[in-house]
Length: 337
Image 1 (cartoon, rainbow, N blue to C red):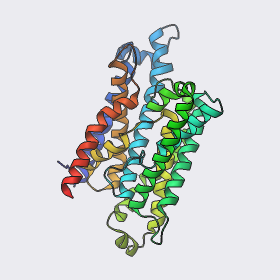
Image 2 (cartoon, helix red, strand yellow; image 1 turned 180 degrees about the vertical axis):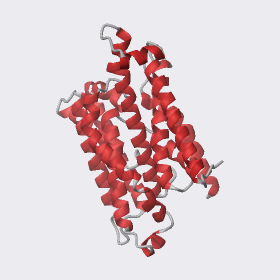
Image 3 (cartoon, one colour; image 1 turned 90 degrees about the horizontal axis):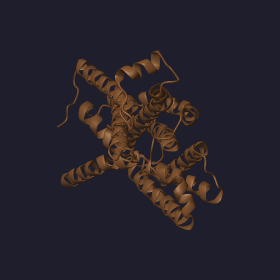
Image 4 (cartoon, rainbow, N blue to C red; image 1 turned 90 degrees about the vertical axis):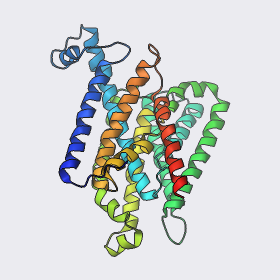
């Protein structure tokens, strides 16, 4: 059931509610884990910090960083997914399909296998470059032809590049079991073990990409009315598509570079946002960012608790949530056709 927001005050109510839900989820993220920490202790860790108190150190050195990274990754993957579904006009489109994850993964495994790279910070930059290269390849292949960039070619190019990089990656992992062990946790996606030194170098790029994405709402609304209509209204449709592709590469590439291959956030969350905002990307994009952050934080909290004291990779949790939703959307699309 769609809850299209037809009045401005209703839109603001939903937006404020999402912000409140995010704040509550942040509190859970700071208090729940292998060691449960009270809300009062979290408050003291911020405003009356004592380095001799173990729980204060856990909050300041681990929980806060982990929470911030989950917020950034969830928001950017969801926004990238929303824009990806818009320009491809495919409800099953996600950054994974754009080849970003597969490209980052290939370059990281290549570096681990042949260059003996074993540093998370080095993986970050290598993954960011790999994601960008894969995205460029997809865009070039999607633009081949007399009609220029077309949604169906974009999806097919993304699937082809993803399959190619995935095949190469699997081949390298078979050749080098030690390399597989060194990147295994990264492959399944995680916000654990990351620190601010990994987030801060990429944050300026992600911030600029998010800022541009918030201004893409109106052009995407016009583009969704049809290519001919958009051109008649004076829109440079090629520029909108190119800028959208750049935003996807920066946001999804930066996220994959920091947290590894986390799937389904970019698929599931845009549908939630569109169910509330309708086909209005000016509201859908910010709502996607908020719900993406909430969903990834919740997934991370469950990943900490479900097999405690061990921890499940967050990518596994998002897959558990996302696969049934993927099947539902796919079956719904088949019925319509």
